[in-house]
Image 1 (tube, rainbow, N blue to C red):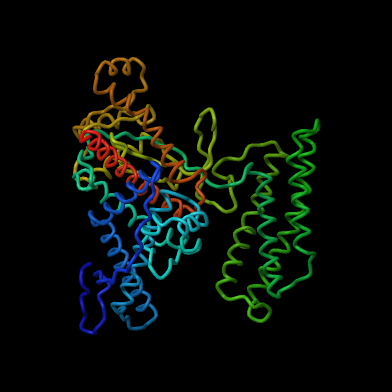
Image 2: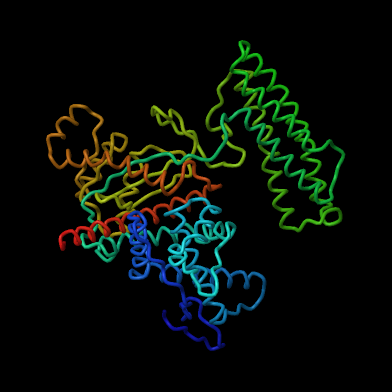
Length: 515
């Protein structure tokens, strides 16, 4: 580690990493007879070597330290206080936390996605403890699920993206332990939908969610001392559960449509009563929480925000359910509420056998021939069309590597005359699948185009690997910023695991040749 740089005031410059005393750790047990464990341990060790040898870990920790110091300095100036830098011991503690956060996030992506399961897996596995740097002789302190949640949201998306870009640049230069350098011969792009974790269908279920969340918030308020005249919250929850069961079973009745309308009218009446109680409790809590409750200001702020979000959307949800079920009229997608908790999600028409329509955000992916993901973007707004995403993606690739790829391949959704002209002007071979059948037959006679189109079919598998093995289906992160951050971490974990797999294949090939 670089030595600490002393300041004139005796404090440590947080923009520079300080020397740390490394902890003594246990030796890993020798495991025999399990090939899968042998491969996993070797590839995890390769990921460790890449993080250290390529300087990715040091650069990431130093960037996190710099950002932390800038934020602390800005807060001190805003409060009118004099900012004092941390001592060397405190700076080393922050470094260890940032490094542990990075490694825990990577290890969690490669094993268990859920915080609770990974915390338990980390407590059981000496291999993962060594990778995360928590294998001390005097005892192992495993991060809890809440700590892992904070680690997941500790770094902004731009820092994780820069970490992925640095890894990709060194992979192209051949500095990641893979003898065969990753090439930029061709890029292959496709888009998919990252499904949001929401409830279906998106009409009467919104009323159920609104009543449940409001009553749970009111139950917390009453438990902490503030009570207003109303029945017990559990009675409203039981009533809504009975109505939800009746609505679900209406499809089995001969007069199902009439029954659904009757049940929805009862749901609407119940939801309006809950809204009145919610507004009263919201007003009482905001005005008298200091005198009548033992809640802290932060807890009150969370409860008020939860009630405000539900009470603001519930009237629109009631009107939407009325239009769809009682009125039998469609609601425009732009005016439709898909979830009371997720705002930046959209209706995405996929037209596939297993998913005609999906709810979530569009995700753009670009990989190279070996499968390394070199560009991605999660769209906050509705997708303007895959053809309009191609050129910005190639420009981002150029900014990362300093040059364009030699060939670009994609399906018919990416083809347009504008893209063809731009690729031709940049000197890039276009292997985009034309929409014109005659033009496609003509271009299929070219071997280079034909080979890239055949390779393009594997991009669908790459999309599935990223979503199923690294993101999870559905993605559990709440809010677009957290989903965007989760995608960046998933790409980092995918690329590290892919490069370790390439190194594993080369090592096995050498062993076989030597034997």
